[in-house]
Length: 274
Image (cartoon, helix red, strand yellow):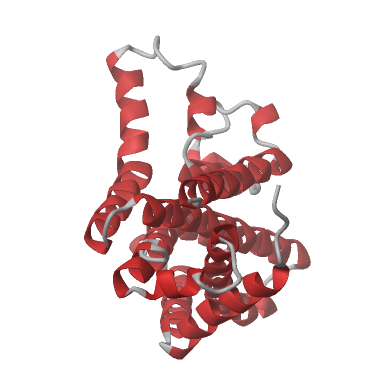
């Protein structure tokens, strides 16, 4: 088994990261996260006739719904042309003439994009945490930090899927279509299929395996990870009655999310080999 040289991986990752910094992509995404999070924190209860920050639990509950839609889409759009885009521009052949393996190219591309996505998430949500910190206890700040960490894991999982799509696709058009299809499936369709099966069968089909089916979707893993971290949010979502405590342990859910990051990236590296 060939050994990996960390130097070319770091060089490719650094170029990918600084390219995103220079085209202001990171700044734009961080600004979007900051504006949406602050709006939800201070105006999320406007429908109840009140304005202003109320609690970190309710803020996280609202942010979870936002993040499930926003971060997967951003991650997929960030990574869908990582490989196929280089192929179309002809720069991939030039890159592979250098003393670097295909696996090192994939890892360098992924780590650079992951760094950009993580930097924008930490900057955007971290700024909101700093603004809210005078009104939060140490425990509440810990919960908010946990939410930020889980949001980063969600983004890395969908970025891994995007890199896999980029390896399999024949051109950028097909890659973008596949990326959008993945977003629709995991964010919109997957839960509808499970709920539809439960309703049609009157709860007879899939009831016992329902919690396990949720683990097959990184967006649902992110939701459960945050739902079970806060009592007020858990009651709000009502999942405590259908999700066994043994499956709701944060370490287990983080391990599942880690599998969602590693598995598509492993498939991409396998497919990209000559």
